[in-house]
Image (cartoon, rainbow over all chains, first blue to last red; front, side, top):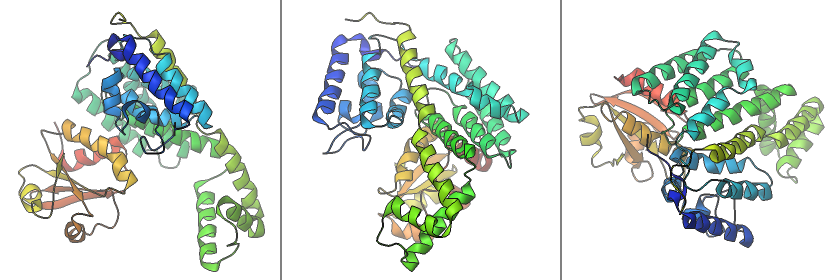
Length: 293
Length: 107
């Protein structure tokens, strides 16, 4: 595995990156997205002035999978002030000269071992077996081993096959998607991004499940909104105001559930934020491979 | 990953000795953009077994019409000059890997 030495061991590289980020924050041009535009930049764009995670990775010495996942992690922090604090902490708390080459596998193991994920995977022996197999490969990477392509392929096939066997359990299927997404070497640039996406997908389902909000209800609201487009009902209102007016008028029970759904939506992102903070902790614990100069 | 056009499609895709994974995409398509890094890496992962090419449907509308492309991203596998499988819409890396495996086979 290619070594990832933060800031190439150079104090000035870190300082320059922090200065660029802070100047965007001070100017009010730090954004969630796009990565780089005339109006502003996200955590990647602030540093490399482009939508280019690879360049960020090369400039600052973070593994490509971490750089690729950074924007989606920052995106989980709301409002923007929290996002800027996280983006700043990411750089600020990364030691100079640290070897981060194991961090992605460490994070993937932790996500796969989250109690709320395990509580689901244990419901289906094949999915649970896959979860353990994927974790075992990543643990070998953390211990300095390099599982070969055939091993990754075999557990990946098993993970997909196990998820396919889950027919009617929505949450378990989402947990299976996390296992599938993690069944790649940490050197793959989108592996962490994909796992966090799948973890976010499970979080959405878990939050909606708590209040009994289903895909069918979601579709029902969508259809009501579509029909209103043709009939012109409440066309003086826009966006959510219109949806709520439509539901209040003809579907009061659905309206109640939809309001709860909106409240639940406010909670979204916690699973990713937890991972985000753990990543920074792992940065701080990473072995220092080069003396800072 | 190679860009293919109406001019060289037959030569690069239909007459290719290897199976070809064709990605129909457009610059304005956000899911296509999201899929691009995964395809890049899968092109490397399967470099021995398949060729992966991209077709911009805005630049090559005749190819989109010829293959009945009604939604993108559309991924199509062509083997021995014949389409053998397609999938439309966003797809996870592992599902895409399984799609390639089941239609091409690997080591």
